Image (cartoon, rainbow, N blue to C red; front, side, top):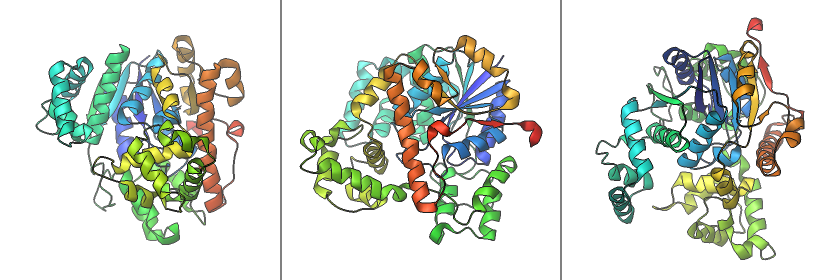
Length: 427
């Protein structure tokens, strides 16, 4: 049985993702494709445009066989942390043969060679890295310079992730074989949805959907969007956009909760104020002081990021840090999670009914608990692992509460949610 793993956010799912899934099955001769997908909060420290169940549904309709949730403590981490946790989860299943990912360069030999250099970290490499950082270069640029990457290959976002994936495979001594697909279509950062673009970026779709006032989507807007997403996912989009107020979320929608949390933590009566905000993941002393000086106050999320941004503190780093404060993800929790030899659990968000033969294989080979019903979690997880799972549930409840407040969507307790099962015979 050939099983291929994919790491994704699908924020949201578009034609480029369908192409990636199709090529993964073709190039690795996969019988089944397992996707490790971020839940309701993304690696850049922002909420997903659509909730994790909706995105899972689209992925299953478009060819994924099984979707597992990447724990939020990892989904909101740095590229290195995000990548390692994702690869470790796939590796912990014990049955995945290949890891398939997109990259700008499309050359797996270059990525593997660079990963090998980074894994060894010679004295010369460390010296050149320190030299680049001392000159004020960002970490990705300083690392690319230390690698002798004159073409800037490892300054591109998907190449960086691919490099981290291969590093993790080496660190874990994983038998999974990395395979890369050259990225096609719009660039990662392109934020305009062009009519002629075959594979638009997820950012372009998000910008397009979030730009109308009050997020009212016109008939012409729907037509333009529908040309950018897979036909198999259209029924889901039709249902979403058919609502009077489509539940599309962005960082600014979480501003009130974030400011409340910041004011609570920086008040004189708070224990955290005495210890400062550096207890939270990715919060430096500089950023902690800046945040404390701005509080109390009421700011939009993006406005706050703009006020805090410096040459050394990028927008993404700040947004990720704010997300960790919102979700109470501490540096200690992150370090503990990162140090685990295997994934603490694999929570199933959904699967295709015709892929049921995959499960006996996973149950025979997995090194981590498979969670299909949350009610069973406490029976099969250690207290340490259960604490990480509860962090995922908290994050999803935060997401649902904001969606409910803004759009009146129903609030569903995660313990009452059932994993999605897509039956191909009913399509």
